[in-house]
Image (cartoon, rainbow, N blue to C red; front, side, top):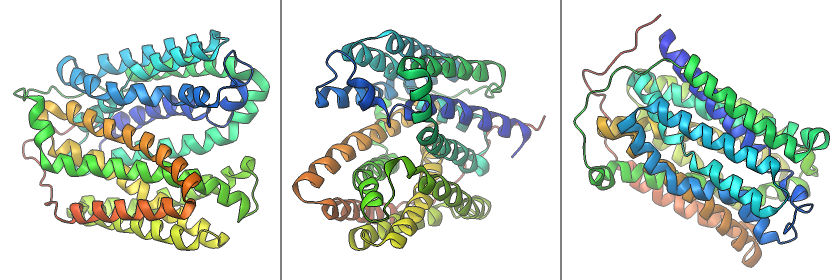
Length: 394
């Protein structure tokens, strides 16, 4: 990768990380804080308040992605971050659950994931794009683990209003990174294409199905896994980061050789299929071996290895397959299906746990992953476009 590509990828990954850290920090402590708010005794409303961000995001990814195709990536990203900051300030000042819901909804309006990934695609050559996407995926994994460690400490020291204020500051820092550090994308001159072309593209449909299944499985299995770590491994919830952090770090490093080899020799389809097959093995393994502590940790490692590989390769493939003038729109659809996968996986995981037990979750996820694998096996190799912009080293 050139210096410009590294600068663009690292800075945009840091924007993702700053934004996601602020969101992840809320999860471990929000339910406790909500009890002190007006209306905070309603568990359904507490869950809705926490999930409001993702719910609104699901409906805004496509408009923001399309806007980034028309008006440019940076203006859309900055606009989304401003909404993120405004929502955080409203949450910090709120004394009721409804006020928190309003603030979280405004934060969700700033749906910039598609614009950021489209800008990474604009500023990197196709042979390096999966590595750039891996930087984003790695930053998200690390911020998740970091949030699990620092969230309880921050809650005790500065309280939830202080944490929301801190989130607003993170948003300001992210804007500074976008405006002052992230290089401008090379000029893009493409003939506009109708949105219907994006929706009808069967190769994009394969990838959209894939990201739905991947995040469905992620959310559904993590309805069960934390309880298993408590019951099977004897680890209290406050210590789970001791498993998640090393597993995420080692699995991220372990998946890099496959990404590098796949990019270098044009074998990304094989890497992609292999990661889906590993995900299927993981779901079957959890289904059969959940009560064995060593197997539980080994399966978590294998899951994150597959997950990180797919998180890096799928948006890269979307950016290659999508019409050049509609990368933002295509990634908007992709991120929308990702958000729906998160929502549906969480809901299905909770329902199945209550009605049929944890094993049913992994059986369902195994079936969905098998369907995804069958569909993905038939995808063609993705040829690189000729005549693409190549960022210069600076």
